[in-house]
Image (tube, rainbow, N blue to C red; front, side, top):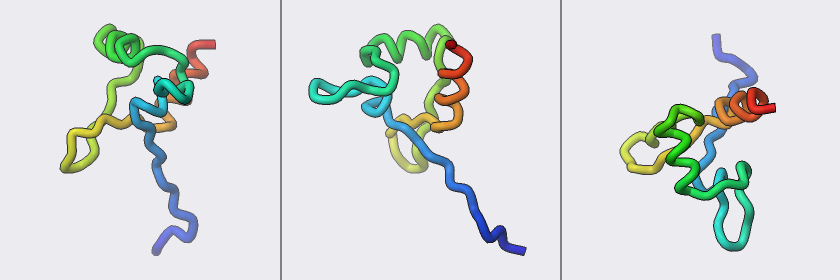
Amino acid sequence: MNNPNPTYEQFLRSIDLVGNSKQRGLLGISKSTLWRWIQQNRFPAPSKLLGSNIAVWRMSEVQEWMKAQR
């Protein structure tokens, strides 16, 4: 039977996490800091969108990480 209330996974791109010159990102860190944290296993590794080279993070994983940092 079909689920009448399907859930959809939300994803974040690196620009959503680190921002750009006009807008602050969710984490308030630089892009180089983000990738350093990933290499040091201090932040969840990204996934790649199917058929592309675009790195994305699951919103739920980022939220869990943020809660654990408190």
